[in-house]
Image (cartoon, rainbow, N blue to C red; front, side, top):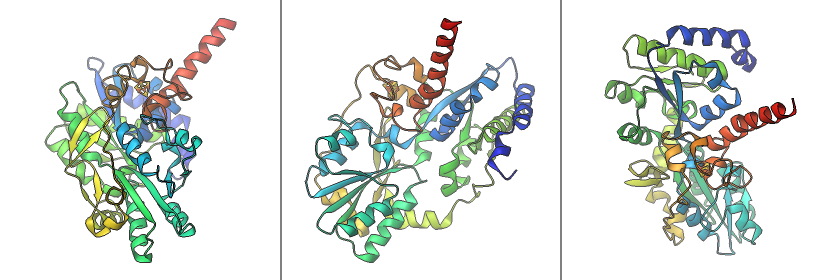
Length: 376
Ligand code: SF4
């Protein structure tokens, strides 16, 4: 297969669906976690859940970096930009994420200099064009985006750009999976492994999930055929009482990962002893911080960071949804107080957030059917 249409072809989807029905034991209930928010989005966008037998349950994982960031980190980042000399920059999907005193966009409406950039390199360019200002980039993401932050810092150092810094919120996927497996309220049979992160880290770091935990994991692409083929591969492993790491996304993910990207991460970052994740608490060695050799460009060293710890509103159940304990629609606020237009939690904001994906595809579809039914 070479073109995207081939990964959406009805006949191939039909064959994969048939294979899933053939392999799934009707006496058994399967719980497969898709770790990555991109998979959650694809599952709802393409209606893949409706193609599966009812005894295959897809559980949404913590692989949306905007969603797992605790609210206090957003407030910490915004507090740095209270200095009128600072330009706050971030990716577009950060802009509507609520902090305790509003989102970056709401702060912009109140006069803060907040700007959307498409990459950390754009933020660096902005700093070079505005030598009288300080440009702070709110860096976020798993190992997927950490290399571009690292390369930007290496460039800032090489070119001696002094009015630029990074507020580092990069997290790492493996400790989050470990925390899920250690969670007493979780029962997962197998994992649909994250495709984007794996382009950088490769497949090897997942070996312990199969070897020590006895859980199959298949690194998967994001098209309908990819996700369905990955489910076929997981069912085949479970049917043979096997647990191994497989790579369905070979066209993009090298088994050993991207050595140049890993080298850049290692040059600029080191592991934090611990980091707070929304709904999951503090997880040891689960995030990156900037090495002292790049400390001049570390916003946490240049600015006072209040270290705000804000708990989500009591009725918001983002933590349970992030851990896969609840489905988005089971949150008390879903579709009422919390909608994409008026989000309470980040899961309703990010394009990879499970609440936003569920609302935009499942909820709107159900609402449309209700309207059609009422008119008929
Ligand atoms: S519906 Fe809103 S409050 Fe509830 S889990 Fe989703 S984002 Fe959080």
